[in-house]
Length: 130
Image (cartoon, rainbow, N blue to C red; front, side, top):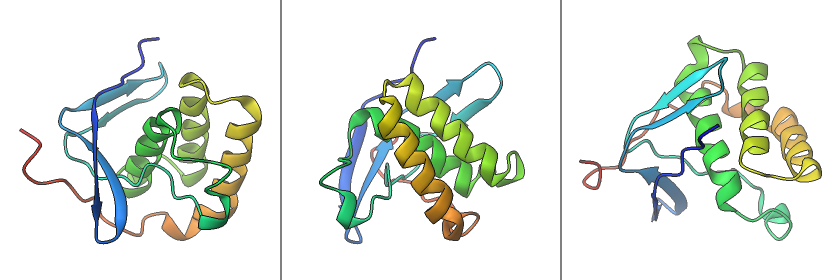
């Protein structure tokens, strides 16, 4: 499987570190094709401050986090919340996140991300995405 690894731009916007790619990203698991347009803003992973010393925003997590954010904000008509979380787990594995870390993050998402499902419309970066 060829894993997309586009250059991600990052900046603090409204006090939050956000990531975006200047090019469209395509993630094809064979079961789901997820296409994320250039400029889509993602926080990578929403890690509570208490856990940031344990789980940094590693590049291996970031791409899976971008997919998860896209599914939570846009793909809600295509997949259920549980499916979005399973897809997140799948892509963490593909990007080499070890078993214990990805299972811990997955359980945290299952427990804590419910409030984010279908809440915010997608945002896009301006200027860099041509």
